[in-house]
Length: 172
Ligand SMILES: CC(C)(COP(=O)(O)OP(=O)(O)OC[C@H]1O[C@@H](n2cnc3c(N)ncnc32)[C@H](O)[C@@H]1OP(=O)(O)O)[C@@H](O)C(=O)NCCC(=O)NCCS
Image 1 (tube, rainbow, N blue to C red):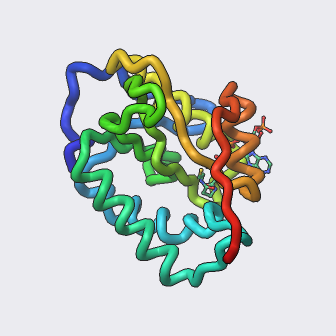
Image 2: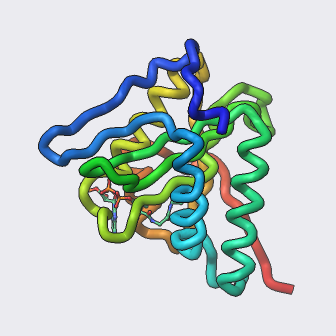
């Protein structure tokens, strides 16, 4: 996994919260199984009632997203709590904004272990993702979030993200 390598462009330094026993670091090759597993277990939160899909399809599509990202300029940040993997954020850097062409970091996915949610891990991962983008000189970070994903929407809105465009869908 390329994200395991030190990247001189990045300002990412381990972010520690001693009170929470949590820190964010760059993912390593041995984290890939955790990332694939947690992604598959959590991706249902990104499905919408407009496009019903089975869990097997969602899991397969998350695996395809991961493979796609690993083949591009990317980084995976991993949150650890008490020394165990607790969540991750997957960033892609070579997908500029499709309208302006302006470079950006694209947050392709993030997730936190269900048992570790609402403890600030998502917020810490998001902050680390922004630091990673800033360290690479990127002027923006963007992401997509499903309308019905209240936890995700609140996390991003609380961190200052604004709706730029809307993805519309109509069942035919
Ligand atoms: C979205 C997700 C990553 C949030 O992670 P988390 O570690 O629980 O988030 P945090 O504890 O850092 O919470 C940060 C803010 O998010 C919001 N939030 C988090 N969970 C929430 C929930 N269940 N309901 C409402 N708001 C929630 C709150 O505004 C919270 O701030 P507060 O604690 O000051 O109220 C987590 O719920 C998750 O993994 N969900 C499944 C996968 C997913 O939806 N990923 C996002 C794809 S776009």
